[in-house]
Image (cartoon, rainbow, N blue to C red; front, side, top):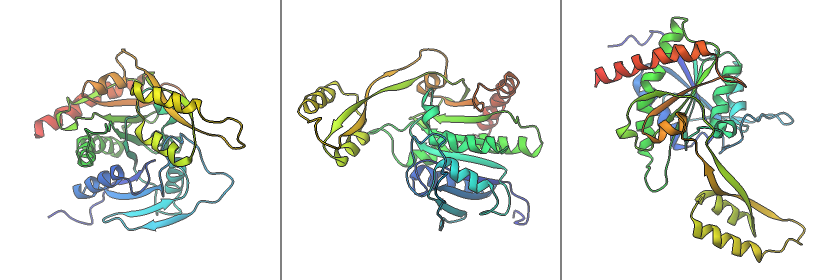
Length: 307
C-alpha cells in the first residue's frame, strides 16, 4: 500500500467555463483518482469564456469555498486570470502549486482564438508568475460530442501532466514558455501527440441586431454557419428599427479563416492531440521548442508501451 505521507506534487486547476463546468469536474476527478497529486481548484464562479486576460481592478473579488470531493476548492467572482492569481498568492492555499492546469475547455483553442481564450489566460497568468502551466481544451462538436468525452480527454493528457511534473522535480522543465493542448473530437481514436505551432485560424464574426437579450443568447448558443440561417437573419434584421434608444446586437459567425499550413488547427483536425508551446507576448524561444520536440515522442512511447 502506498505511503500516504509520501510527498505528492500539487496541481491547481482553473478554467473559464466556471467551477461547475463538466470539463473542469472531469479533469479533477481523473487527477484525484490517480492518487498521484494534491489537487487544488480555484476557478470562476460562473462562465467567463472569451474574456482573454482581463483582470478585476476596481472591485474586490468574492471568494467562496466549494465542496468538491478529494480537493480543496474555491469559486472566484472574477476572471480566469484573477482565479489563477489569487490561487497562487498563498492567501487561499498554504503554498504555491507545482503546476497549474487550466481547463478542460468546451471547444478548441487554436490559432488566433488563443488570444481571446480565458482558458489560455488562466495558464498564461501562472506563467507570468513563474509557475509551470498548461491550458487544456477539447474540440467539442454539437451532436457528436458527449460529456464523457471530457473524461477521455483528461485521461489522454495525464501522461503529459505526469511527465511535466517529473521534469519540474528534476529542475529540467523549460521556464520560458507554457503549453496549450487541444484534444480532437474523436478522442477515443486519437492518433497520438503532435508538437505544433500556433496558426492563424479564426472564425469571421459579424453583428446582428436582435430584439431581446434572450434572442441574443440563443444565437450565441447555436453559432451556426448554415447559409439559410444567415439569410433569415438578414431578412429579420431589415425589419428592426434603428431609431429606438437602446439597440441590441449579438455576434454571429459569418465564415472562417483556416490555414492549410502545418499548424495547431490543421493537426487537431487530423486527429492528433496538439501540444503548442506559447511565449508571453511573442513566440516561444527556439531552445524551448527544441526541448519539447525531443521530449514529446518519449512521452508518447511510454503511453503506447503501457497499453
